Image (tube, rainbow, N blue to C red; front, side, top):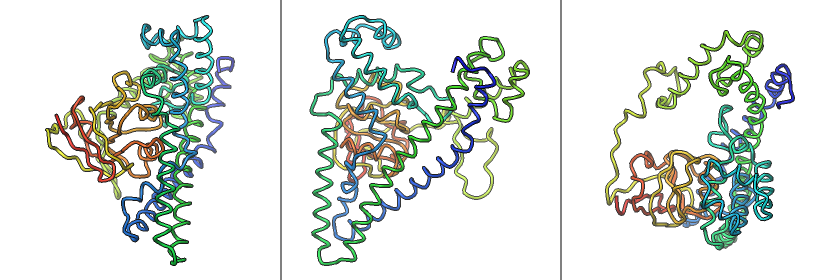
Length: 416
């Protein structure tokens, strides 16, 4: 990107305009079809008297894009067991770790650096809020990757993602055989089951593949824009490189012609943009929402902490029961406090969170559905998951002892 002129960067940013919308449309379609497939499976499982099998029938399906980073980081964590690599992880601050790894001439560390760069080349577009063009992805800032690898270093070998996926796949095959046996002799119902089973797996994979495609394309827009942002920040036209993302597409030419005229405009837009993160948007089906300034602030909303004995009801994401200390995280960048065997509690997750699922005993998310990212990945990695556990990340205290039942979709506070 640094070799391109400003005009060439501008052309690159806008060259994907006809691609992104169709990709996003397909992702939305796949998400809707995922819900249809899962709903059909749930109805069939209910009809044969085995409703508890509904999520098992779509677990361990394999070829789910969002689990790729977990597998790659797991392999890196095994290489990090080398004592010379481990010594860097244990002695160097995370913010300096990538630089120190790249500077090292020690053969084992150099080999780790090569594998790390290969991983970053494959997954450079992943990161928190990767849908957002302004997001900081792993290719731009690799520290979160090293943080997740550091958490995985202490996870036993038998907790490997591929091992747990194989266990879930075996459970899925067993559940499938049970339903087929119950439907034996009813050719119409059996045919419906086979179609629903195939469709559910196909569209769950398709949902995650569509998301990956959109995120990769967004990264192709992000990189040239970020290069422009750096240049105009250095020239003094922008107060931060990230303010380039406050431009509208139709303003690019005017900005390049007279960047100084946008300095105050973009600074004010960034202020409004950041303020939105503390606003709670209304749910509107028909009509128009209230003005943004009337939206309530999240920071003003009172929080009723969950005491011992409190049960938070959610929606099943992946079956199973786990008990452990709650680790409440608001960003996947903050993996340093998550210890193996703890339960990850988060307000929302996207593929950047996936590596944190590996050391976790279970996952609890404030929002989501059985076909949401957290649920799909949990079923692939074989850990209990509850989604739509409303305000769990605000109500559950960090460090509380909790029990997660992914089948009944309950989160019980044992010790507050």
